[in-house]
Length: 236
Image 1 (spheres, rainbow, N blue to C red):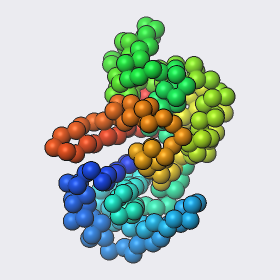
Image 2 (image 1 turned 90 degrees about the vertical axis):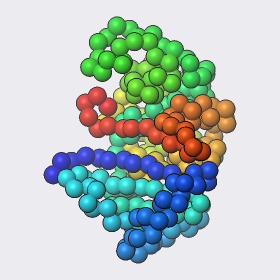
Image 3 (image 1 turned 90 degrees about the horizontal axis):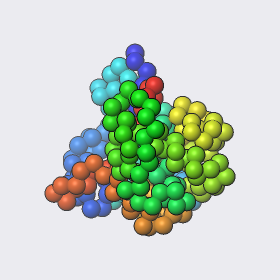
């Protein structure tokens, strides 16, 4: 069996009526597994539907976490793995972008860092990058520059404020999120992203909106799809 830590964060937002209807008519409705109730730290109880998605994970060791904001309900495949903390890798670029904006290292999606001439295997990395292009192309060196300029003290401060995973940045400012000290579970990622989308993180609305824009993948027919990949491979 191929071993792959697979993180998929899916959100059914209030504005995404079309997607919401699809979910209602498909796997959530057809799940034969019983639901459970999940008590969060603030004592709000939310329902968890345990999904049967084995056929989609043949040959892979992973999980699926979806939260429906309309229902206040999770759909989870492999709940045990959804609670296991692992390296966020490039999914951390969402938080790194926000911290960079909050600390004024980044002034907006057009903030540009110059390429230093180092040749990378991924050709799109071998040029100057804006925040928007760095997120789109998942350019590690850009965000290593951001974190270095933020500094250890401020980075730790924001990681703590955002309650991000195990909050451990001891792996070094340019590596802590890359198969190193920082760990977060898929369930924790979804909970953090819920707060992000609902403006519940301790960050300005303007900066959250900038990050929302740079992670938008498509926006058509009234449906907005946003996301960020995260790999456990050598390129991260």
